[in-house]
Amino acid sequence: MLNFESVAMHYADGTRALDGVSLQVPAGQFCVVLGASGAGKSTLLRMANGLVRPTQGSVRVEGVQIAANSLARIRPRIGMIHQQFNLVLRATVADNVLAGALPALPTWRALLGLFSEVQRAKACALIESVGLQEQHLLRRVSELSGGQQQRVGIARAFMLEPPLVLADEPVASLDPQTSHDVLSLLRTQARERGTTVLCSLHQIELACEFADRIVALRHGAVVFDGAPAAFDPTVFDAVYGRASVPARPVPEALRPLHTGTLELVP
Ligand SMILES: Nc1ncnc2c1ncn2[C@@H]1O[C@H](COP(=O)(O)OP(=O)(O)OP(=O)(O)O)[C@@H](O)[C@H]1O
Image 1: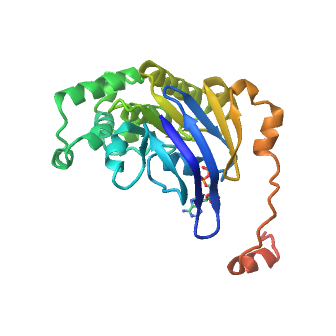
Image 2: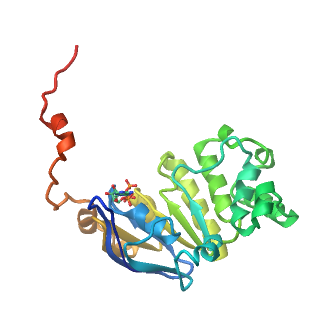
């Protein structure tokens, strides 16, 4: 379903966000990406829908290589769930979920918001399936809790029944119980449809509970790839242990901040 072939992302400032990552995610798998902050998780996910172009290697979705001339074909096949939900806060729940169908609409219909009856019925069914009620349909998203907003985000991601869903830290801003409920919902929705999910997380316990497979990154490279049961304390140290890379010199422009003395103002 999703194939990263020796991908690297080296930024102009010298940052190596990813370095020779190869990963095949088969259809129907719930694959969780773990790793400390800056390990390269978001970069990997953003590569999978063409938001970041690898400086080396290639990415294929359903066998089609992501490139400028294939993006329009690939994008409707991918649902995206974001950490900050990325919803239109002043729009209604129904309109936000319907927006998930925009990539499949001709531009003029999209501009006029002309969704078909089938699409409207689909949006209603999805809203119900993520645990929201009829009274939520016409409510502004800004009036919902974070957990309810992410339910809207999940419903939107499944609007086109994509075979692949990318979830970038989908529960990062939610409390532990809501995080559990939202991930459980995502997992159920994916299972029912046979959807492949690539999901980055910081919560190891949630990864171990919901993932079919865990891939862990450190400094842009895969340091673990296996079943949740194999993610033991040794692996934890390898993924999150003290960095062994040498400290980078402080840039000249920031040097005064590092050499000054700190005075406590009463
Ligand atoms: N546009 C950019 N220019 C330069 N460096 C970047 C850019 N985007 C990301 N990076 C760097 O690439 C590395 C990987 O970033 P990325 O956001 O993929 O990490 P992450 O594992 O998702 O982190 P977090 O868990 O904090 O979201 C980091 O060192 C980051 O600073």
